[in-house]
Length: 269
Image 1 (cartoon, one colour):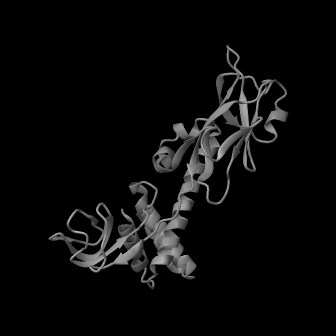
Image 2 (cartoon, rainbow, N blue to C red):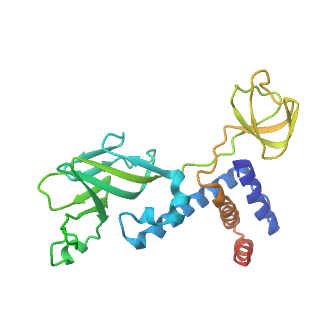
Image 3 (cartoon, one colour):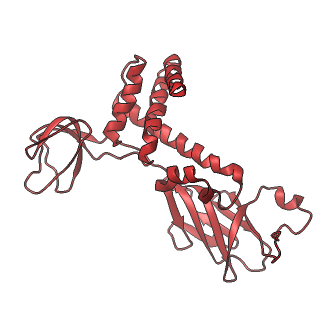
């Protein structure tokens, strides 16, 4: 679904329980909250595995979070190395959100890193840095701390590089600004139709996309939106996002009983 179709789907679920209508800003906020909660829940599904490759081994998580995954090393702006700590810009406007997987380079050798609880290293009476295999291999741990990730290992040298994958912040969806036939657009601009619209001799319906071409910089009639921001999660999650957003709208309006009806509808389906 594009953002217009997603808004309409949220309205469908709200109307299904005979609730009052919500404005565009309220629905945007509800969708954003739904995207954030879905992202966090999917990420948390990987945590019980407690493996450095848990993301790769969890197919559903890969499919849902793939659009949000980014790769980083010491040369990417916002990241760096200080001793055995990977420094990360955790500022509000920086996209880093949650760590997915990590490997570091020590003395020219790459090592996969495993998450370490604060008491695990001290509870292991034997060498906590040795892997249980026929050919011993050094084990490297990490602990996420404020403004970075602390690397714990048995080598005498510090880490010299790293490769990590992280989940970026999903950002905010936006409905855009509504325009009619009086507006002029640039070639290549993408518009979404809000009401029956005629452009370049063709009729477009609610939710259709229009791409502005040479010689036709305005719509003939109708209503469109421009400057919109789409939902960052895959299309197959959009129905769930719409239902969550509808529930968020109802809960924000104090209509818990109607939100419960949508939950029951989801369970029945």
